[in-house]
Length: 445
View 1 (cartoon, rainbow, N blue to C red):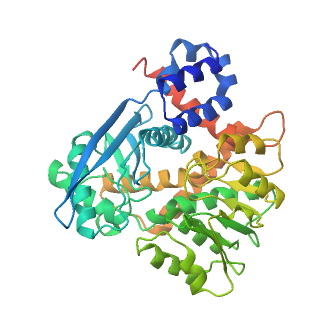
View 2 (view 1 turned 60 degrees about the vertical axis):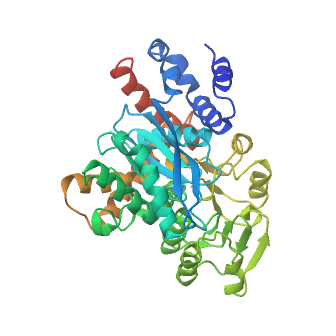
View 3 (view 1 turned 120 degrees about the vertical axis):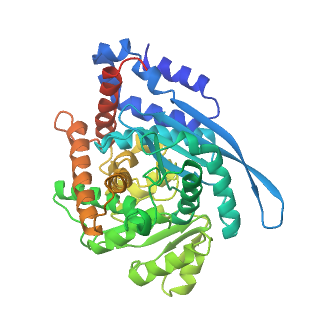
């Protein structure tokens, strides 16, 4: 069957799930030659099996508000593939969450985990619940109700979960507490725990750190460095926090952050004091960035826009999927941006990626950069299993090694005919190859 026909059938079988179909299409565009050249993949129906998750769990999550009213949200867990190891992936609490988004994130997680070279499969879950504006007691009751539906299908050798958008250390604590009470187990089923009871001190920033370490490896191969570079960042959650903190430490200057209300341009750069203010601002459960421009004179707040119109050397989208389309990509090219490094999952639309494919701007997909979060999760799991702990310095050294290895894999598989490296193709081919071989080795499952 041709790839076009396969994708046509995929769209018919997955209506109203454009994010998932987009993710599959981008992968297949990179590995089409590999599929055509290996008859074993067709005989083993690898594509057909790979585009169907192992298990989709969809359930109601009733919870009691402080006023005594019962609300009901929809919960998800997509256990996508465990051919490389136990399912592993985060939980997202966000009002816009849908099954298509969860399937896309779970599919992407399979290949992120594969690219890390660690023995982990892929999964994702969450709920269309918004923690913002809820009391501590309401968040706790929601997490406990969510875990009542999930506790018996997760475990350290079955499905390992952690945080994502809307799920931080607080939520992980409530979820784990309920899991422990129901299962009578204190193990590594959850990552992102407090360092006081099994977590690592780097988990909140780990994804952002990993992005910057991979960027550093890329720049080194281009005979360049982070020193003196101007970086535009979107969002101001954990991912953006980690990116800003590590980029500052390595000599770069981050000049933007953004929220749903618009973006802030700070030509002086977001230093340590300003970063601490952002953390305090985020702790108020508001994701608006306008107060930053009021707190720090000399900055500019732009309402209702994204930061990609600002001149920068490097753009790092850290907010949400598909935030960079054709218009934003054109602005980056117009302003002579040299590197576009996805941090948030699938930050660029297909059209934007296509428009950038023959341009001098270097594009790196989130599949590669997000390996940092995978690495820290695996290291936390290893600590829990061995009943020991490592220092933050030891963990960060392991993280750097994993990101350097990930970059090397992307470069190796993305170089064709000695031309410019296609990091999207490199990440997809390297990740797909490992998953496909494992599927063939393990038989028709």
